[in-house]
Image 1: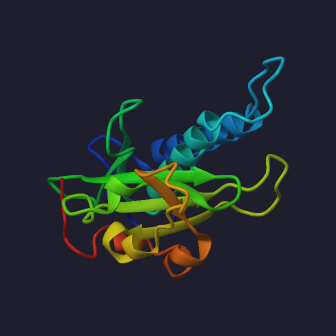
Image 2: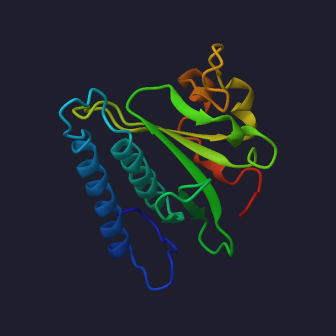
Length: 184
């Protein structure tokens, strides 16, 4: 349990918040362990469990840090989590990008005017048997837009890659969620 007084949603006490955080971590771990799709000729692991685990790990970390947070409905366009500070009347949309190892696959449209005010949390989960902690990089899209790498072959005109080097300075930079004051 976190030390000191905390302000959660109405009717939620420290014990219930601890239980919620524990449930998020257990669910994320279960998703990580189920990271393969059992198809006869499948060579590549599905990215869906990795993405789901990343969202649950971020959710648990936000709750642990005292934020109000809520997962978006599955396949919601443009964001994965709504987050706010205790007492805020509005929540902020946050995108989560999770990988086992960098780089992250990104859409170029997430870095153009209108979307560049959004914050993306880049998550490195590591291998399924990893013993090192999950890493979080909390980066404003506008700050890293110029670092999106687009392959020169023209096969992916709408997409690109975000490297670990590009977001390294934003590791555990949770204050970036609200630095610009932008809200939903």
